[in-house]
Image 1 (cartoon, helix red, strand yellow):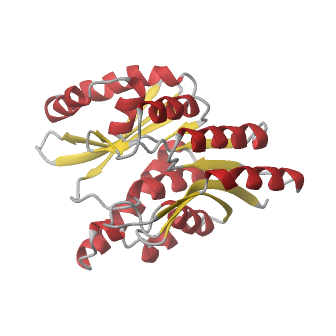
Image 2 (image 1 turned 90 degrees about the horizontal axis):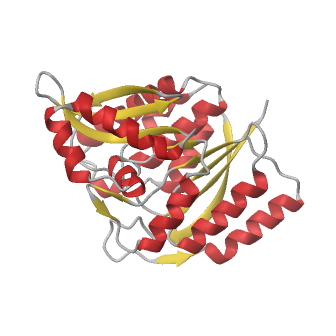
Length: 282
């Protein structure tokens, strides 16, 4: 069966992120990626002096034209949405193309390291919260999860340093806010029993919680969240178990980070994932 997914994200000329990452991952997994840009940037926002052309006014043309053509998708992925209007147009797209069996993955890009990204307002957060409630699969990082659920980020981080099992249980309780949505909270820092710094991707589905952890390799590279979300959507369309997809995504990103560190790749440039795409082949 030919698999097709709509990727709603920004297009950044530099940074190995957003649509560039989505298309590469989905293609490697044997899935046609149909990009719908939400904004066009010269480089991702970590670069000084980046230029940005908002694309929200053009999103309706994509939706209407694809609807006229009778296009159908097995999956829909949304990432960086710069404004409440962009979120609203994304919600309209999802409602237009969603059918039984279509998976909508929302990567609610709002912030990281305990802070909301520059440019996002309370209205942006509320719009994203509403969109996240429509998702079949949700992939917030810890900061974004805390923002969306009104959770004290500092308290969660402190709990991870001392009692990670209690942290995971607390997050699982908070995830009930999203009802029947499968949720994977990414990049949760904690220390294991040996005192080693780890990162956990907490899989919350059907009332269960499964921590999938990897050693913290250091640094904050552009695009890792986009790569992670794309692998999870690809895995869902291939009917992979969610936990297995999370392990695959974590291994893929870890290999890319290791390569980036060997090559002294700047954080803004993203990880060296190109040589690791073979891990994703169906």
